[in-house]
Structure formats: structure tokens, C-alpha cells
Image (cartoon, rainbow, N blue to C red; front, side):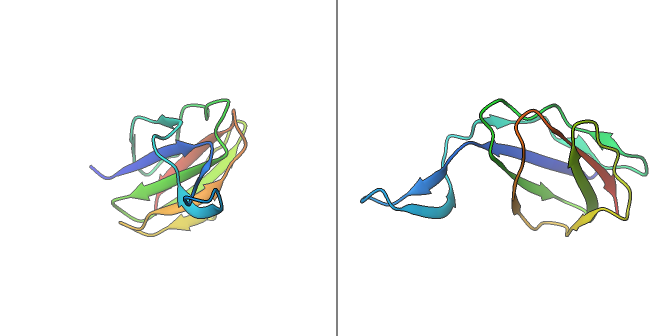
Length: 100
């Protein structure tokens, strides 16, 4: 069964001089239980208080939306299979996903 993995981050990485870099800084703020993709919308847990951005990776094409109480449809943002993407999100919000 296809899944979506959500990794939450609070800060970006930095080089040795402290300059911000466009990379995620490990360890992550939180790692959510993967969501099983299906024909109906499935919702994540709320993002942690310190979360500023997330890494999403699904092993099948899907569509997602972020909101306080979201319901995903195939009209929402598509995510290609096996492609990791990063998005800024509000702490405390949730993500909903549906198979594409």
C-alpha cells in the first residue's frame, strides 16, 4: 500500500561560518507516522509547535493540502511519486492527502 512520509523541521542548516543554507537541519523536530494513500482524504497529526517546514515524500502520486482541518481532493497540490519536496507550514496545522 502506498504511503506519504512527513518529516518536520524547525530550522535550516548552516555552514561553518553560520550562513544559512537551503538544507534541512537534523535531527528533525518530529517524524510523523506515514499516512496510507487512498481514494479518500487522510489527515496527518498536527504539526509540532516548533515546526516551520516539512519534507514530504510519497511512493505514489498524490495530492495534498495544509490547513487547520484539511480535506484533500485531486484539485489540490500534486506530489510526484518518489520525489522529496519541502514546504513551509504553520505550526499546529495538519496535512491531508489523497491518492492521485
